[in-house]
Length: 224
Image 1: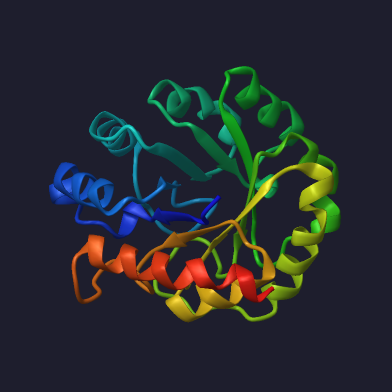
Image 2: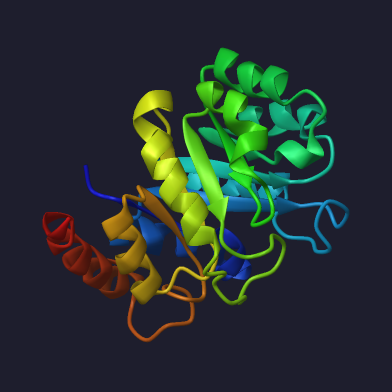
């Protein structure tokens, strides 16, 4: 299976959201990534429920929701009802993480954990049995345009070793430039959140940029 390319929709032109989704669909992206921020768990605001609903209506591709909010269990059903296929929660923001992950799966959707740069794998290991995806934050959550934190590669390596036991996929979020993507692909990462480092605001159309990334990625797995 080819690696997943997931545009971060907080970086898109939200005034022309339907057009943006159509163009990204034409480019062949895999998952539309929706960051939800409440200004409390992270010091910023991003997309909202209406944005997720609009994206869902505009594409047949997978839509994920990354809940950077306090007490996500209270809002999970809002986003599931809006059509999210995958929901990530942060263990620091939720008192009953396992219960919330199980609820997402009971609704027939995919569940994921988002791991901040300062979140230890040891603290979330037991939760991984319920995770379809693990979202590794390689920047501090809440803002676009940050520098990639090199020390997070050690954590990614550990998670790659654990994938077979637990059965999850690893997606990296934060400063995923083409160079970072190529390096992490060799390690064994399954997908990448594409923001301003690789997709939005770059020269060329979305179709050209995504095609270029895929062409380069296709030759790398053989180097392992």
